[in-house]
Image (cartoon, rainbow, N blue to C red; front, side, top):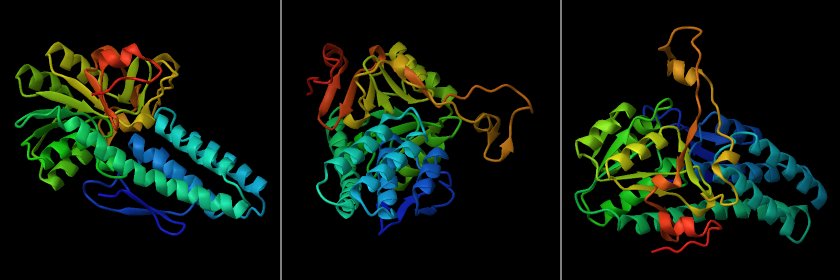
Length: 343
């Protein structure tokens, strides 16, 4: 399922806040509309956010009135700052913006050449994401055996990427190879991406899925109902994986019960110049916790803490599955500059 497309100056993408009840496609026609879609989580998932950010700059270039190379570059810099301000934690957004700007500055020619180059680069990034995800799936599928039950957290499927997914790519690839795997998806409060999106994707694809609440993870592990855990990532730093809130809890429980804990993510998610303490954790609206949809479930005036992400130390990670292979924890820790061995 391709989640985003460029159509002659319009970015078409599915509104993930409307799923699973409605499949509604947004037509984003300006940089500001793209920025709002990212901030409001109509577009979400680290790889997809990155490609959407790139398309935001493509829209800025497409609609630019600049008549000189210098002016269109200035406009792109200003547009990049708008996109950077949307969500602070997922590194793919910043990686994508930097890559588009680099292409713009390296392009030889006038403002029209820059305009074309930016749009071409954004489209290239979208196509690359699909191939990267399929490689992640192939690399990770060998970790799954026929009959395995995999627990996953949040949504790291095709909806979080341009297509195919990261954590769900591993499951999809194993399924396509004929392995009869099944999935336990936790609901992922407060935005319910597991319940709304992961369950929706897997049911659409015919992969057996069982939905549980977040607080049931310990129970299903203690009962021996989980063989492996596979999650995505919004940023991988020297000493930790930063992912949707609740990931750390799942990792600790997996460690306690001897369940392998895998992280599936593209290398664009790696930020190996930083440690966890240097990363800003996004805090979101209290209404995401006090309400489910438009229905209030908590008393008026209650104090709310709502971090969107948490930090899982590398010590809890069995391996990272990326497009280049499987990086085991010991290999990752031996080379913090990212030149890790893979198998």
